[in-house]
Length: 396
Image (tube, rainbow, N blue to C red; front, top):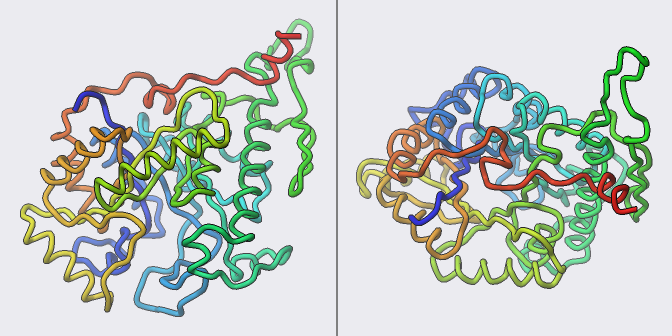
């Protein structure tokens, strides 16, 4: 490899296969304990994984699209991703922590302050995976809005009015959050005991956002955090989500199934950047892969077949399901980096087993140089963003 690929790992319950909790390596009795998440995060950090994403949603897991399925043979229930990340912050030291926080039904002020607090707790290793929610049963948890049943074909095409509305709202939510992150200038806290001034009020600014979904004035209650702005990421599959990523995020996860699709998706992402007029650094693009790893291809295939049999049907995934050896996965990562990807986000089918395989075999075989910098932005080569309000003041 000619450059250091970014390696992210996506954590979700007992693993990304719905029958993972029944695997002999699983620890289903520990899924709702802090020790379980700490052990996974520290294992990933020792392996030099760059960042962890933590899955979340506003409703129970389901195998049905946009609705509850009533199944009792799969993991149901989860801990709050932002709170998991906040717990992991002081028990890790290098790895990025990127919880999923939904924009739909969630107030941007709460999102902004929670992620700023995570950035302080982790000393600059926080990120945010933006996610929308169009499910009627999730809206019912809040009682402020109602949605019609989701249509799978419309969602796949990405051309429904609801899809456009959800992503337009998400774009506004990210804008509000970013304004709140900038609402304190870096040197707003002065701690001048002699004059009795703790803050310089002239360096606090109002977000002053007015839109269809949000009307937000005032500054955050949290000072500007170590990274200035935590990294923002999104998972995207189609034109509208690609445009959200292009306007609002730093990093996008995509789901190619093969090399041909990997190339076409990269083209779609760059086309989306051109359509929305993105300026500055292009999106970092990471390919998602669900992985089942064993010492031989046949053993990996048998492991996946056992999981599928326990589930009662083959696992379904938006991305590539890779069942093979660590060496084969290294080749797959190298091929996509060669195509122009910045790296991959690996979804372990079984936790902790496939994460252990990644740590013991895949990450060492990549031969990546050590990452530089203490913050997540520095680790991934992103500059610390200038404060928009300080910049305007200087230009005046």
